[in-house]
Picture (tube, one colour):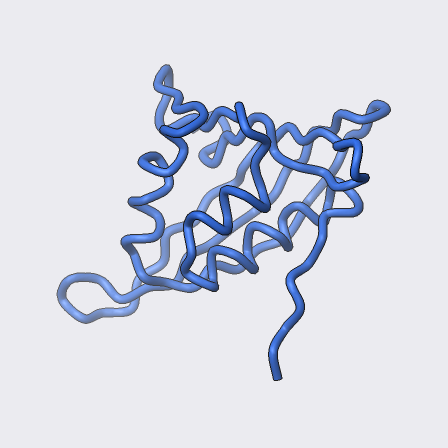
Length: 129
């Protein structure tokens, strides 16, 4: 059975959108569905990627060839802008063939578009770490 792609009709559903497209393994579809055009992602403290550079920033996560799981912990909404706190974990196989897990807590800012869909404008996948 083919799962229908989720739509982020609420800020908390943005997490479902990210998980769905990551697990599909298509970075371009993830970027198109999850991010606004000029979104930024924090690659590491003090280093951000924006626009076309989002793909390069996300490639290390996709290179794990894992499956992501997670969920929204909390949302704080003000009109068409929201803060989304979410926990995530990628289960993958390391270079030695052993099961491994890469996880974190993300603080994301999302905005509701004219089409009623919420998309990420600031992605901070490692929270304050």
